[in-house]
Image 1 (cartoon, rainbow, N blue to C red):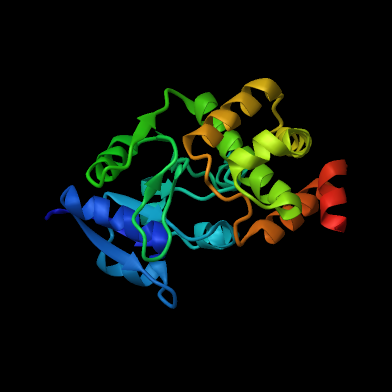
Image 2 (image 1 turned 45 degrees about the vertical axis):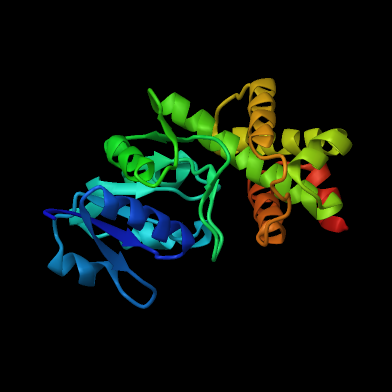
Length: 252
C-alpha cells in the first residue's frame, strides 16, 4: 500500500474510519493519546489525508498542533463543528457531518447518509462505502454550513430536551413537540449568532424531523448532554444572547 492516512484519535469513531481506509488500500498511522503529531510527521511527512478524530472539546487544541506539512490534508468530523473552528487558523479542511453512531462492542448504525464536502470528500466517501456506511457529496460551502448547523440542531435539541423528558427522539417529537420546538428555536438563534448568518428556521426544523424519522428509537440524552447545555449557555453569554428555554432547563 503506497497511500497513507494519519488518524489523530483512535476512539470508536476513529476506528470506524481506520477500517474503511484500510479496506480501500491505505496504510493507517494512528496518533494516540500521549503521542505528538509532530513526532509522527517526522516519519510520515506526506500522508494523503490527516483525519482529526478527537472529541469536540479537544479539537481546537489539536488544530493548533497540526504540523505545517499536514495542514492542507485535514479531514474533520466533530459534532458542534462550524467554520469558526477552522477559518481563524486559515485551514480549508474536508468536513463530514457524521450521521452514524458507533458504540463499544456494537457495529456502526446509520441514521441518514452523512454529508461530506471538500478536497478529500471522494476518498472519505469511498472508505465509508467499503464498510456499508452511506454518504452524500455536497456541492458547495453554503450546503456544508446548512448541514453542520442541522447536525448541531439535532444533537443539541435532543440532548438538551432529553435532560428534561428523557426518552427517544420519536417520543420527543410525538409527546413533547412544544418543548422540542422551543429548544430548537433557541439553538437556531445561537447558531445564527455563531455563524453570522440568517438561517431558514422551518427548513432546519423540517430536516431535523427527517433525521428523527431515520431512527425514531435513537435516545435523546447522550452522556455529554449536561456538558452541551453548559457550553451552549456559555457561548450565548459570550455573545450577549439570552436563550430562555435553555436557561430554564439548566436551572432544573
